[in-house]
Amino acid sequence: MIPLHQGGGGVLPNSKFPSRETSLIFAVLIAIALLAPFARAQALRGTLVHEETLHVAPSADAAKLSQVDRGHELIIIDSSRDWTHVQAIMMEPRRERDDEETEAKTVSGWLLSKGVVISTNPDGDKIVFGEARDSEDEASRRRGRREAAKEAMRLYYRVYDLFPNSPLAGEGLYRAADIRWQIEKSDVATRPSAREKDPYMRGQIDDEWMKLVMKKFPGTKWADLAAFHLIDNKLCGDWQGASKCPEKESDIYEKYASEHPQSPAAPEALYDAAWRRSALVEIYKTEANQKKSEESKNRALGLAQKIVSQYGSSDWALRAQRLIFYIQQAIPTYGNATD
Image (cartoon, rainbow, N blue to C red; front, side, top):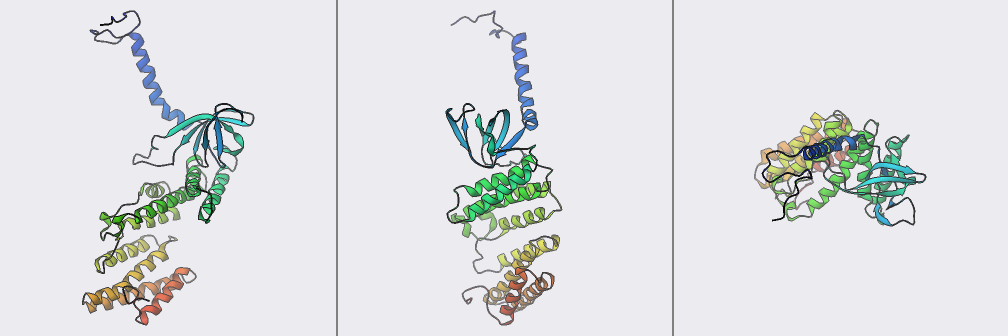
């Protein structure tokens, strides 16, 4: 066995206590671990509104480390003329249940300062938000920039993250959550379980960000819109021609409209409820329940007329007017008899 050197401050095999030097090292390490999150929170932070290449030194001729895309978080370390020394956090922003960001890949290096917006920039929130809108528009184009949707999501999130007191913070967080929701919703729809009747049998869309919007910005239209998205996880994949699902879903939409009367989504919720009631007119006939079929007709007409009277200038009011016509003319809105 190799003898242990006893003069270097190590812990002897039979020692009950560590040496003073070892205790000091442990204390320093613990202090660093405890202070690291605080230090990051106090550091100057920023993001990119244009992709840049990370170099090992402040020179275009220096070795390249990585490309940093729009919206990634940057911890500012130092600056030198046209260059900024940063720690780039290379991940999609994501919140866990404890409201902390998950562990991310980080790369330190130098990048050109021209595309960097830091949290102390005048109108920095507007610049980042504007870039997010542009990226979102780019994502909607047929030949738009690859990954533009994810860039928009990151940029919107950075508005909330870097400028929490900005008037745009709530909208930024909601728009980030909305893009993420749409991406995951499309993914869930491609799974075999998407056709399952009961909601709990289908893949669920991650609702953390929507709930974060409701928590951070209660009483705002962004919180109302976030709450509307949450209904998606309560919907059946396939009604399978039975009345149970449309009954339940109509109740959910009516409840939302009642609890969020000022929400921009209130007329849509009422229309969703009215259309389901109109579908039940035919479904109850297949279940030989004429009484409930007639009740559903009256409820559908009542909801549609409410939309017309309360939201007369909206597209939902026009669609409700068309739904009223269908119901009055006994034109089926669901099933094989529909046009």
